[in-house]
Amino acid sequence: MLVRLSIRDVVLIERLDLAFAAGLGVLTGETGAGKSILLDSLGLALGERADSGLVRHGADQLSVTAQFDLSPAHPSHAILRDQGLDDGEDMLVLRRVVTRDGRSRAFVNDQPASVGLLRRLGETVVEVHGQFESHGLMNAATHRGVLDAFGAADKALTACRTAWDTFRAATAARKAAEDDLTRARAEEATLRHAEEELSALDPRPGEEAELAERRAALMNGEKLAEGMAAALAALGDHGSVEAMLRTAQRHLDRIAAMAPSVSPIIEALERAAIEAAEAHNQLDKAAADIDLDPRHLEVTEERLFALRALARKHGVEADALADVLA
Image 1: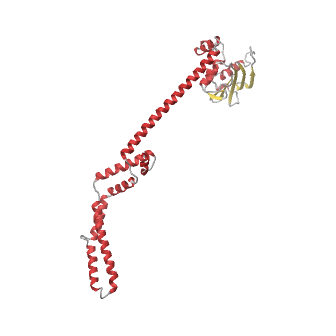
Image 2: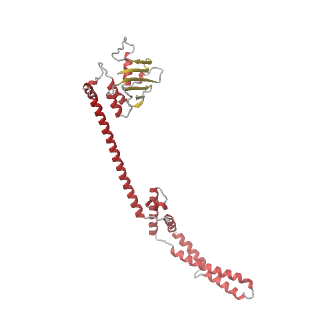
Image 3: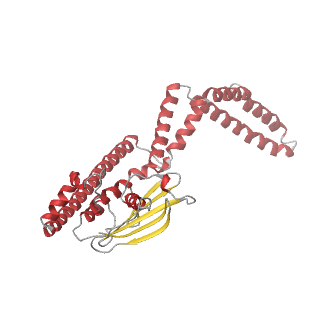
């Protein structure tokens, strides 16, 4: 039953609190006394369409709160539980706030709710009879509640509700378990695919640096070849630098007995000739090792880019890919 109606800033009403006792309550008054304002205010709390024109002049918003005392078997408890809301311990509080710009907010037991839920709950606690009002008995949604109340089926309702709640909990648990299994299978497939990718690539620690160095050399092969050819030309064909150093050494050897001071020079020329010969040999080998085949560059880049892509995918450095596989 309706036990309290609180109205704030509705049309001419600035503040009004009405308390209702059990039994019949009658609101009387002549035309224009404000009886319809009270019904309009109650309608707002029950989820009826809001009109910003109802906001009192000078106020920013209106507020209506209707408080109902419910029996333990009242159908509104089931509605509240279905919506995951507090059932208020046999007390239902419906509140509606409407601002001057037409915005509307609804609350059920001080918890934010939709106007549709407010209307649905209102249909279970208030029956409005009037010339142009709809009757609850004509609403198919109320028929089950009327029959249950007529049959005094409180115990059966409680047992049915308990069984239904148990069934819903079991269904939710099953759904959660199925979701977990689906996620686990998806993760297993992902891990298997990752393992296959890593095994197929077979990365080695330090391989990225080697490939990057090789790629740079292949990309600059022509420049390297030109530079080394120029260096070989500077050294002269057939080791002419070494030959000149040896010639100078022989000339000094002939006068070494007469000028002992040239001995260090002879030794220096010996070392220079040896180093020149070694440099010439290494330069020959390096020039021969230059790879100018574009297919080798393509293969090297494919391998390097595959390593880096897989490293980004797993969020690690390329050298750590072998550890991921392990």
